[in-house]
Amino acid sequence: MATGLKQRGRADFNFLADLARWSGMSLQGAAEEDFDRLIDTDTLPEGVQSQIRAVTKVMEAESKVYQWDRFYTRFCAEQQFRSALLAYEDGEAEILAEYEKYADQGGTLHLNPDVEAPSYWSETEFHLAPGGWEGHPRMGFMIHDYVYDLIFSTGGVGAVRAGEKFTDARVTTARGGLKDHYDDILSLGVGTGRSAVSIQEVYPDARITGVELGRTELEHAKVVAARHGHEWELYQAAAENLPFEDDSFDLVTAFILFHEVPVPAAKQILAEAYRVCRPGGEVLIGDVAPYKDQASLFRCMVLDWETEHREEPFWRGSLLADRPGLVSAAGFEQVEEFGASYPWVTRGVKPSR
Amino acid sequence: MSSTDERKTTMETPQYLHASSTDDLARMITGLTEELWVLRDRVMLLERAVVDAGVLAADTVDELVPDAELGERLATERMRLIRRVLGAPLDARV
Image 1 (cartoon, each protein chain N blue to C red):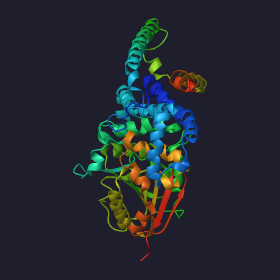
Image 2 (cartoon, each protein chain N blue to C red):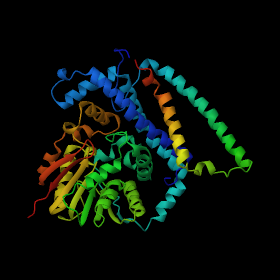
Image 3 (tube, chains in turn cyan, purple):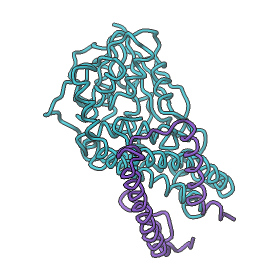
Image 4 (cartoon, rainbow over the protein chains, first blue to last red):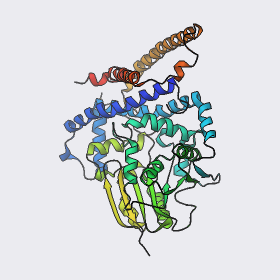
């Protein structure tokens, strides 16, 4: 059982997880049948963005089951943090005791209270988290141990289909590196350390450094490292302005970071990734596949809904962007992309001098 | 759904259902909340009664982790509830 979790929280999260999974499977399945019946692909406008707009209008007006699927998806998104807050209140003493227990384990936190957070981060309540990623002194705990572990774990949320697992996507991305071993790996947007756990699983001997803007996420990432017996260097910094020397890492990774930032910021982040990457080193990006690489227009429509309805303001821009082009423009070579709807992996190599 | 219904899709006020159903939905939710409270009141009284009778310790239910068998039964019942109540619109499809 998760730290501090009582009957109320367990039952509440079980309900939300099952609702998301059921809606994602049964209702979306029925909605896709409606889509095939209602949409005449021969009459759609040119361009995927225009097509998504056109089919969304038809489905929102004509498909009752699509309306309910969207309603339940939104409901789960709204409730998950409210439920997490209640569960946190019930278990706070045990949660704080675990933080205390691991105070001297899990590596080193380099907090910077003066960090300059970009407005797209500080002014967005990502995923409808009240107050954003720093909306609660232990938001990192709630995101990781409750929302991700207990609600997202069975899929049916965002890009993760019902029945799929977020963890699998992280391991798949980590395995996308060209080499079997790396000495120094940088995880951009390390969050609460979920992707770092997968990276460490694939490359057990690597030294991992994580960068993240959120203090509460970094503090929880250290607890997560301690739980797994890892030691990470965790820095509070913007990925656009990294506190590291040139040529410091032989692998720079970013998992589901790029759909959370506007394209101009993505360019800055990639420029920094290039600077701190050693010659011959790699950049490895795992994210949601662009619309052009999704399996169907129905899937594009469902994914595109996230932009306006689950506080993902940069989602659409990211899924329309030329990700390999951005990686190439930063200076990386041998740029390749591969994968499935999620994760979609983009990899580049910094040329040797 | 009437084709004349206005549908908002802005981030602040997304709307998925008929505006004309709002009063009915509010009645349903208020009535459900009322019944939920009656049930919660009864569960709290029951817990107090079994603790006072020395059958359970005060935090037994809060700390009880369902074993695999009970977890499976709970999952089955939970999915039945979801399908029956929240799946009602899907069952009504023509």
